[in-house]
Length: 201
Image (cartoon, rainbow, N blue to C red; front, side):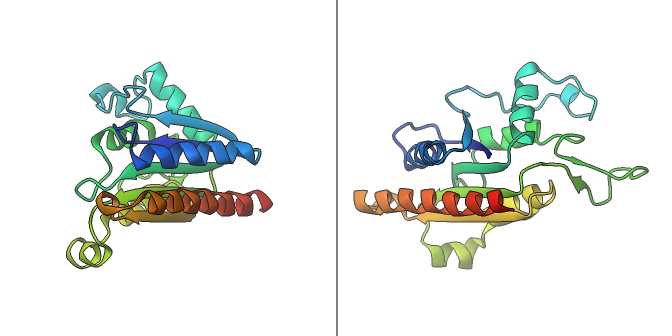
């Protein structure tokens, strides 16, 4: 399988980096073809220009390349921290620029754009790995879980990816080395299970 891994975290020594690299290495070790994008390392420009908005808009080569990597993936892994209940701005900009109409979704003929889109992504499964410094009870009681809605319903379900899996690792700021190592193993095992099952189908 071709697995796309996208990382959105600026600090190289972060748990997010460790999670992303561990998943990449493990996926390669069991025979998957892995495409990895570290958006901060690549200095990805998150700003969506007006010319890019239309389906037939003027798309820079780098965005076409990202679109190809997304659309050719059999499985997708996204790794990022929970910042204000949202992905970091660089990752949100990646979504804005790469999840394009006509590429990741389309509307039925005659639809003005107000209807329900048809998902076009080839991937059958997606995994999102998040980190947080908010305890789970407070997160659910006070904030709900906006990242679940963003990734599951607003993005992947809309674009045709029905098998969705997500883990929130917490609380990072007080975690021990042993906890972090266990979380890395948990992330690897989740990806192994998800993409093994998809391969069988």
